[in-house]
Length: 217
Image 1 (cartoon, rainbow, N blue to C red):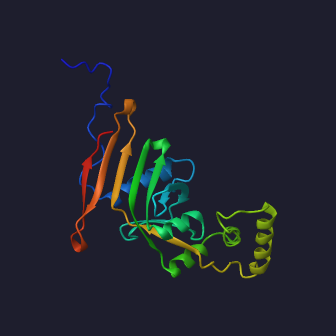
Image 2: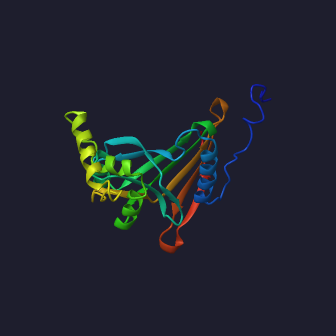
Image 3: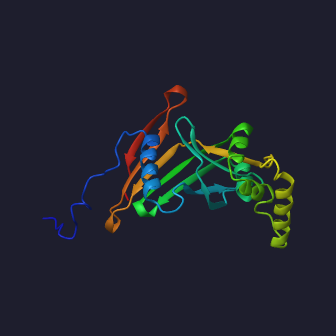
């Protein structure tokens, strides 16, 4: 006879992540919950890239567009940064959202596609003027002899473009959309009895569809 006296009903409950769901719609539901409950940057996500020979690196970026119509999950960056160089050399990546207050996370994997120059322009100029200046003045990820060198650039660019209130977008400042092929939803439960469901894109062309399965925690 099994002794379940140390487990409560919540731990023994079946999966609450719906099977055969649209993973984009499920992401929207979870993201909406995060925006209402996560105290800081609910759109923050870890972006993992790798060199062609497989050396990985990871950093936090901000989600700036998502959904089926978007074609995936979009972020913006300096393509001459370390992550930009890795992306150019190996156009695939993975994302991780971790919303600690909700005890949930989502892992997303797939190839990357660069946004159009028009889309990059539109987003760059939607940012605050201070952010445009800060981005345009930065040789992101490259060595900096002293911080004052960067601050001098900021001051100079600020003065040059203050009248028009916007900075020309540097050609290397762009965005990428991750086209998901795998999306995994995870819910924390006590004693490692976590709830995990993986959605995988299958087929080709017009026959593409999502399949899903539970995973052992």
